[in-house]
Length: 391
Picture 1 (cartoon, rainbow, N blue to C red):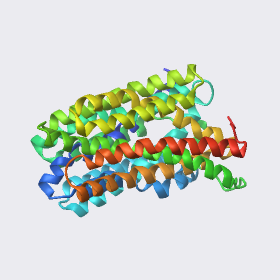
Picture 2: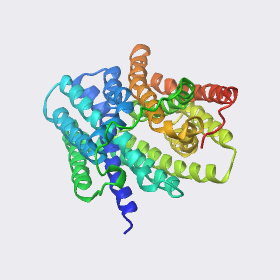
Picture 3: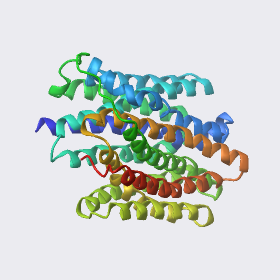
Picture 4: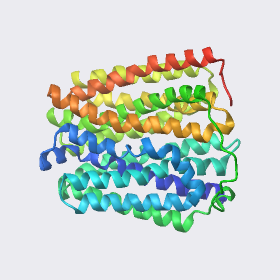
């Protein structure tokens, strides 16, 4: 088999394990609230904490790969993922959950930043779009498996069992990367410091920050939806396993719609329309979740929310010079992580403050609809600066 596809398969499998781990606490959120007497803000903070290290590590993550080698750093990141779940699953108390979640999140951030670069190394050229679509879709695959299975497992065996399973998945991914991944020639040796430092302009930072904010709002709203919709559904009479399966189906539909959105964007030049339709429809459907049977609007959300993903991920390349894409994507990911880490606990705090089971879902709807004016501001600033595309 072509070594490129072996590398892609290994990296995709490793990212599936990361998404599986990320989803674990959201899948068992109602059980944590019940068994550990946690508030929804506590659960939201635990869910978002996994992404919080990315705010600091996204930009220097690429430097670590250059200094020590991409494969070494990714393997170390998988080791931190295993360690984090072992701490959270075997050491009692909320403090251990916090520490374990943070340790695992550091490992997950290193994977997310560096493996994107590694896929690019292997597929630079005409095959990159297809390879990146497969790679990005690994996240909803991991989340879908977690949503389908972990809630029911935790109900039967206790919530630590879910963390033991995700630790085992991360360990399997570590062994797979260590044994099956052959480094690309760009990762043959650690880089030295001889190259002159490249400077990214303030204009590029300002422009790429807006797509970063959009992607952070998308991920933050999605995390809130999958973490707190089960609470609403359980209050309406569903059991946790059924709620998890519904959200798992949403995630699988999201995977399909993301793939479809990429194909549509490739064949159709009206990218702005595709983003507005996908994001606008998702926001409106979220507003319907608390006022009707939640299953139908949630499933419909899965059908539409992925349509805009390809467009969003293409926006940074429109405003970054080729020589600054590494640092620029670090800025993009840092802001994305800030949104994904900070918005779920805010959604939980709003639900604690207002009471009931629907406040966090309304907050998620607000976040999604707020993307539209941010996108309009981005296009205005892009055209005002004359920076139409650097691709």
